[in-house]
Length: 233
Image (cartoon, rainbow, N blue to C red):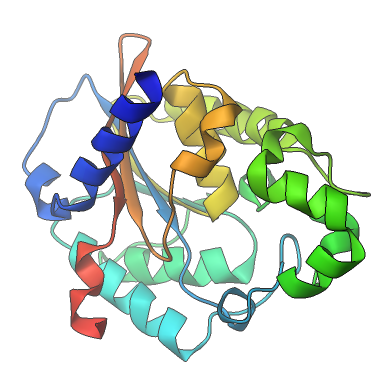
């Protein structure tokens, strides 16, 4: 039942426009706008990038521009980013349209370290690591990537960074530009669900998640919204 509820919740979030949250102004709430970067050639080619610093492609730049446009009426106090350029440029575009700059980058918001799988195509990994890759696709929370990280490793570092953001900017609205796996493990963490729910949580390029923190408790009010991209499709 819990899994079904989670799925229903996520489908509902997909159809809610970002603007629906723009007028809320409760100074006791710290709001996190957690976004994923725009598309890269590695995303398009189904190739793992992880810590490899791949730039946005032409479509990814267009997606980032539409994200910035979609958020322009949502006042944001602070912009923080992963140091990887695909996330940084996405975040920078959002900040620039509000006349601001990125406050700082935090390496704890980097994508998962794929280790030996970095730069490799999914199809090649399926062939060269058949058993491990099959487990990775079905139950990724059980895998420690060769010379890389586990999802729990990523969750621990990203949650530590998120906790610091909340303590540093109470009552503010903060945009964090990050990556799909980072976002998913953070959503699992704040929803207090296990990483065995990882495959149930989609994160599309330039998707928006809105998290609110108040009195020691989290709630997710928007998840995987891509309504800003409607002009591209």
